[in-house]
Amino acid sequence: MTSLKLIAALGLGAILSACGGTDMISRNAPFEARAVQTTPETVGFAETTAPAPTAARAVPSAGPTSAKNTLQLPASILDHVNVAQINVTVPQSLRVSEANRYYPFGDIVWREDPIGDRHAQVRKIFETASDAGVESLDGPNAVTIDVEVERFHALTEKARYTVGGVHSIRFRMIVRDAATGEVLSEPRVVKADLDAFGGQQALDAVSRGLTQKVRITSHLAEVIRQELSRPEGYVNAGLGFFQRVNNI
Picture 1 (cartoon, helix red, strand yellow):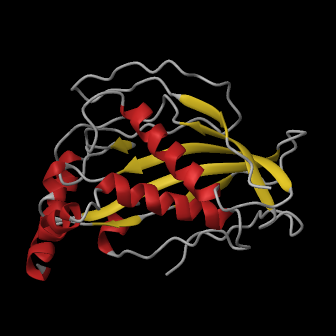
Picture 2 (picture 1 turned 180 degrees about the horizontal axis):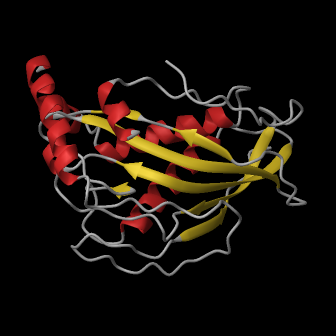
């Protein structure tokens, strides 16, 4: 497997050079609170851009390194919150790629749901993860969190069944006072990369129920929990070559 990954890694460099002129990545506009949007539109088979679903839901209130979190929650709030509402936004400007390459260029790469509105599918994953991540937080301070997805790069079929890689995930997060709307933290960019299984390892994981969706959802839940309970927030893992490629 080590030899296979080495060969694939070398080949990946050539693929990136060959594909560099296509699938240009769109970047999202500056982060700010948005009105709730609940009318997703279907995305076809071609690579395209879909509207940005946004969700606001009441959440039952329960009584190696990354960039430094320079703007943290106040010490009096940290680990003393309960989350009254979660707003998840997947901006329209994020481009979906359906290309079956080892590394397709795009902002959203997702395969484990049927072809359709990828923005809505990614939003649902973040909603489920956020709900799970805040479930154990039962402090006296009610807050609202705004989450805006900037990147959601899972594996294509080609990468999934050969070399694997990294689930490259990035989102922006703001914490507000639930009663007043006052911002308690400036926008914090959270990198939440996860090792992505490939080949036989991926097949073995699926046989145990560990699909990409299960692993990513569980991972994001823990990331969000740490962001609201640890002074340094979540610290992104160092995942080597494939992670560096994702940062190109």
